Image (cartoon, rainbow, N blue to C red; front, side):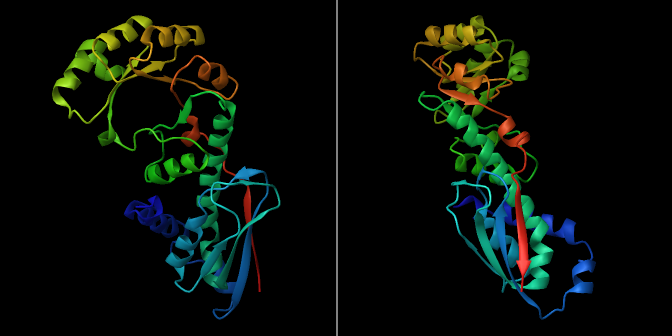
Amino acid sequence: MHPFDHPAVSRVIALALEEDLGRGDVTTLATIPPDRAARGKITAKADLTIAGLPLIERVLTAVDLAAGARALVAEGSAVQKGSVVAELWGNAQPLLIAERTLLNFLQHLSGVATLTRRFVEAVAGTRCKIIDTRKTLAGFRLLDKYAVTQGGGTNHRLGLDDGILIKDNHIAVCGGVGAAVRQARSHASALLRIEVECTTLAEVHEALEAQADIILLDNMTTPQMREAVQLVNGLALLEASGNMSLDRVREVAETGVDFISVGALTHSAPAADLSMALGV
């Protein structure tokens, strides 16, 4: 199933329209005749990676089934400032009612894709993959993770049911890294990989002895990560995490880790600059 076909996406579109429309668009209803047709275009006002184009028609048809849209660029492509990315048509009132909502989705998803692309390009030529996290706004998990893929990134867990990731608080309650991994191994399905967070090289050694599948190197220095890569020597996959910036991500990737998780992709990506213009 395509993420945009998931019921959760239909729900978030409906919620977005409901909170924006309220009791009705009093400005549009007061100024635009109900039989007025219009056409429009959406333009990139800055260089960006476009994501969310299929949502345009979904938002429009949620307001008016007769409205339509057509993408003029490929989803996930690099778009230059001034490029028209989509055209739309229909009754003017529904187009105006849907304008802010569809732009909000498109700007947000394109912002996530654009930032992701910058991180992916920063580690180009290494074997390291840029992955996302669960740090998303409620209701936007599927959309945000989709946008990451359009920027060239890779999805980590979609939800808590998607894999075992033993974090610091699990470790504290279990009594240590090794104990937590062994406890998970004894209870979890053999089909689930077990990942555990480590903050020291001693914990990395403990995770290896417990046969963790993935070891998350949390907030380690670059030299510590390099040493962890040598210590693990391919016996587990390695994920680097913790305050990853564009300035630092390349040197981390060059340590030999398999993944770098970046929470900022979904919780701090600035909205991409796009605008919509209508005409008759």
